[in-house]
Amino acid sequence: MHRKAPGLSASLLLLAASLPARAQPAATDFELAPQRGQNDVQEWFDRYECDGLAKRQSDAATHAPSGSAPHGDNEEYIRAMTACLTLHGYGVRYAPPPPPPPPAAMPYAWAGEPPAARALRYRALSAQLGGGYSTSAGSTGDYLHGGGYAAAAVSWFPSAALPLGIRAEGSYTWSTPAPALLNLNGTGYNKGEVNIYGGDLNLRLNLARLPAHWQLYLLAGGGWYRIAATLQKVSTERICGRNECTVFTTILAQTHDTSSWEYSWNAGLGWEVALDSHTAFFIEARYRRILHYSNAVQLLPVSLGLRF
Image (cartoon, rainbow, N blue to C red; front, side, top):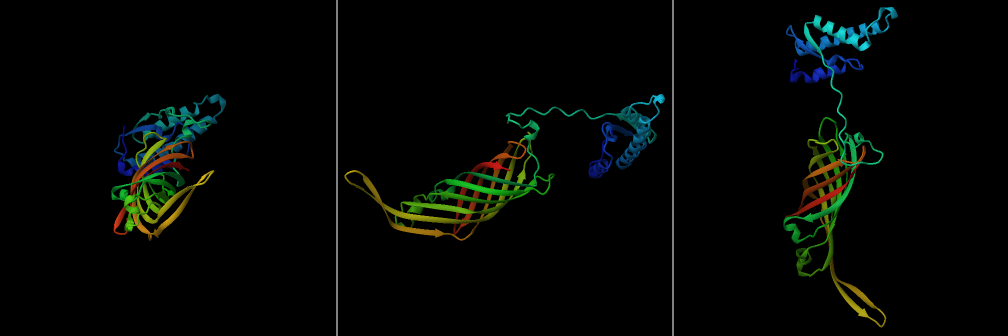
């Protein structure tokens, strides 16, 4: 069978798209073997010309007088198309495409949703909500314990043909101070909280999709974050009366500090699976580094949620 040159694929696809729509058979159902050295462009022009001629002839046969016993519409089209292409110097073989295979069974079932609807589909804009847990990495673990993590984001993919998109994201992490931070300045703090909040502008790269309903993707980008820490030295005293005991809390020392907006960068991996035609479940794990003063705050947030 004659194969088309890769360099002309885009032009040929545009030309093929210009052929008028028609139920099977179609001009592209014929395999051609050029016998006069025709190139790919000439071949497609010949297909276009013969397609129009064959359609006119098959339409005429369909409306012929009943006594003439014409061929059926498809048969007449195939005969006329084959004759025309042969006159243009091609070996012709009619080879219609095979019927599409039945859809594969899905590993789960959702009431009211056919399997075909539970596939990941292209959407230019999507939003997501998620949450999880963020642990500290490296020397940051001496100052911060792990804590809760929440995030919301909006993604934009400019083209269905391009697996690269832009994601604007905001996140909030709340955790508790570790011993090195509680012992700051030798005060002996014994209670406190640390909140980290800000936003990122990330690139998302979709990797090859194996089943139609799930895929892996990569994330990387930068942003700006603030770190707010409150430390307290608290004394508690328990006083019991005749009928009950009461605990009195006294704050002996307290400090609060909020950093300026500090630059950060992050990178990670995500996985998503379609729940229905509009919703996907995702899991993401990332490394985030915030350049705070002379040190770097290192976090490992893991989140899960829904994308709409």
